[in-house]
Length: 153
Image 1 (cartoon, rainbow, N blue to C red):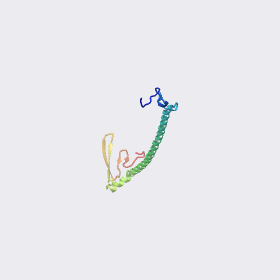
Image 2 (image 1 turned 180 degrees about the horizontal axis):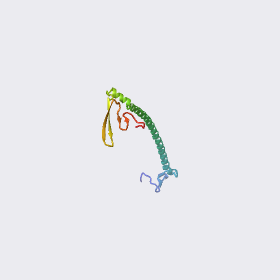
Image 3 (image 1 turned 135 degrees about the vertical axis):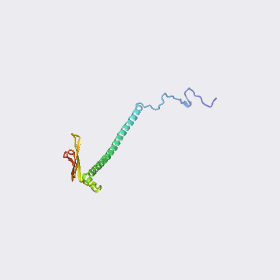
Image 4 (image 1 turned 90 degrees about the vertical axis):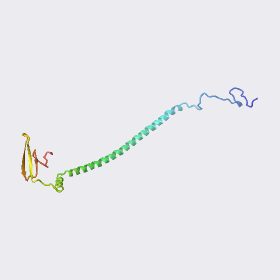
């Protein structure tokens, strides 16, 4: 005799209990909801991704607007500086200023006589004439140096 009781029938344990074998491992069967969970999770992830993309685009646009405003301020300042420099260049190129510097700082004076060189273009010869006491020199074409024609040249 053994110390352990023997089951009366195969598959039955002591006390009338028996072992039940299941074919499926799930304890609770869910028919419709379990098939929809992956689609619900995927839809939620896609929705969050779209919202994140829209917010990110708005942030980038706002940053670009701030940079554009800063560039416009810089452009206005650069244009103002450009205008100041143009005015200063115009003052520096003034004939009166150049003449004053030539006379006062460089010690230049008006010439006592002026010689003209006239080229005869048709024959290729040159002639020299002298006029004492002339203050300005004329160039071929009839313009005095330092003057301008009425047409802006």
